Image (tube, rainbow, N blue to C red; front, side, top):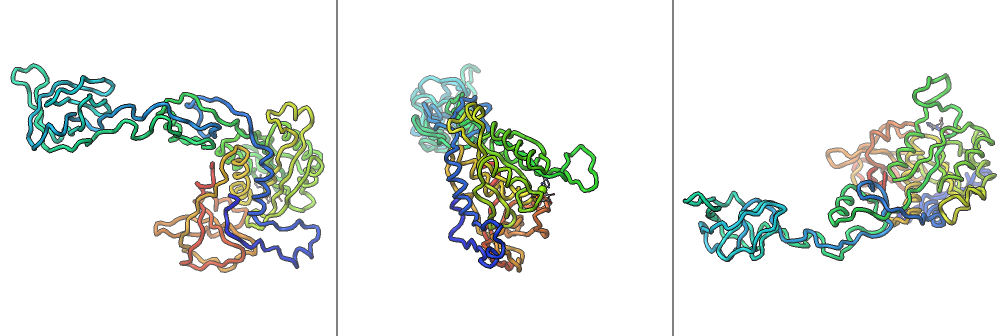
Length: 447
Ligand code: AMP
Ligand code: MG
């Protein structure tokens, strides 16, 4: 992700910067990311766990998986039919006696020259056979005496190797089938199982403490008093953390007070590798996170030249001695802090672009950029922002991109409607027909 963009203007506006001395400087997303990832390195998770492959979905491999066997372990048939030697069938209509019957899971006898074996999908080929003819191309001829397996009239001239799945054609003994750092998808678990791995060595899950700030927030299930809104970020962020394979430590809603915010930070630092918050990171008087983090640790990064998501805080929170000793990680002195903006779309987008790469980094996963597609914009965007923008868009059935009409950072509907983000360089307008950089959401969630 750090390499997400080619050279991009970070566009700090000198006039604006001078006029607002109290404001922290604008940082480009790429610069912020490389600082975040650098900062994450000291938090690399070093503890591993052995888990059953059955329960390892979403975990990250700490060690490669190497196969101790060939897969498939022997040549076998991919069809129901007859196993034979291709050379024994020089012409269509050749009759061969059926000398044996081999269902899947059974091992036959060596194939006598000039004979065929009735065989079923997945059964190992008998020694000497080199081809299978599918039953639809054969005619079974009953034994006149009613005994034995009769004969088969082969309707075609087979080629050696046909319908045979070769020993080791999927995996050869000794091959690495899954690299360290792989996030275990359903198919990766199937792969591990196919080489007989009953357990897997994975990294401990990152522990992420998360809390929301804001006196206006109430939880679904509670009545909504005047002035209040439901706390959606708590759900979005918790879901994103779970999708990213983290252990989410949910600290709920913290009141907009300095002492309460500091206490929450201390508690979070005692338990977590990373502290994630939403809201309270602007420069308003009701925004207590910045002074709270400064009192409990340090704040190193403040605003990012991206839209949505400009206010973003990054720093560290010290752990109390006892907590540091208790923390599983040896480097244990402090937890990473990332403060996301409160606006629901902003916190969603900044999680995807700035937090997900940090979670990958602390799990030792490679820093690979999400795969972007160059696609046609089927919309106009005439008034670009001076910041790099991430527009909520959806792929249409003409292969182009539609824009959600309301791109406001409070409009959560856009995140449910969209299937991707257009990554628009600072100051760039778009007219329909132009090619833009599209980041599919599935490339960003749960990576
Ligand atoms: P803040 O960053 O605290 O100034 O919040 C910016 C906007 O996001 C305000 O309109 C808040 O009401 C809203 N907001 C903050 N936190 C949440 C949350 N957890 N769920 C939904 N909206 C929120
Ligand atoms: Mg607030």
